[in-house]
Amino acid sequence: MSFFKRIFSSEKKETLDKGLEQTKTSFFSKLTKAVAGKSKVDDEVLDNLEEVLVSSDVGVNTTLKIIERIEERVSRDKYLGTEELNQILREEIAALLSETKSGEETEFTIPANKKPYVIMVVGVNGVGKTTTIGKLAYQFKKAGYKVVLGAADTFRAAAIDQLQIWADRVDVPIVKQQMGSDPASVAFDTLQSAVAQNADVVIIDTAGRLHNKIGLMNELSKVKKVMQKVVEDTPNDVLLVLDGSTGQNAFEQAKQFTAATEVSCLAVTKLDGTAKGGVVIGISDQFQIPVKYIGVGEGIEDLQVFNKHEFVDSFFK
Image (cartoon, rainbow, N blue to C red; front, side, top):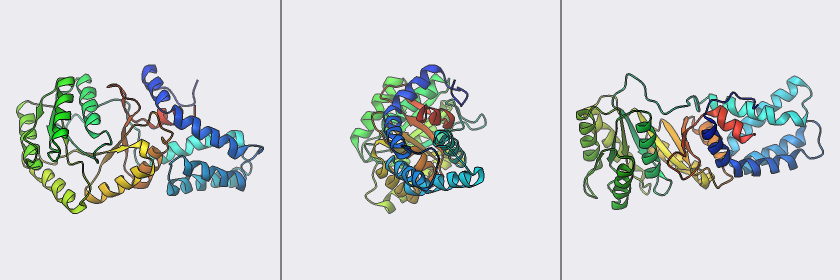
């Protein structure tokens, strides 16, 4: 029986385990080398551990925090054996994720008093933004919510077409205009339509480009203002989608987008087939933004609500 109580269905957990397999294998092969021939956690082990965490895409700042916490435990407990290192690491990583309120949920839910619940989705092209929106729509619909999609990434015709394909696949309504239309106008129409249909969840796709941060900032601000004319205090979430397989590049994208708009939560995609799962820990900690969803496979069911206990359990299994 694992240390953390199982809170996902066994099928979901199996998908998560499988999705993080390469990250775990890579991490533990490095960790095994780091503690080889050592019986206790000393300076050399900590130096090696630092290298392991940085090379696992946890990020330098977050790595230093983790090392500092382990050093405190070593000085407090006077002696820590290397066999205890796994347990200490998982506890400290879970504690770190708790500080950003990451991974508190287990199901696709929205607050009862927010209707419609409006999610504005941002992220560069190619990170899996449209796919994430489609899978989110599927999961919310499956949970019994009425969902409406808005195609406000009007810069690329492909973005509108891709979202239409997902809307058809999931069988949810979509509001769209022609390529080159004003994104704020699409967002306005989407919210009006959602209110008229008494929808529970509205997911709005927005610009997938970062070549001009000021332009992006102005565009997203305008989209927000126009939405608030229909429903006050919207959007309820600004969800930044990041490609976990790009490792450190995902940090750079997070930096750019958090400078351009107020991001409230993250979705980290493409964690399967890569050894860069550590990026989830680093990005959550460094930007102090909770990770809400993770993509651990290509299937429609493979977007999961991020739960820190299950993630750490799969990481250290």
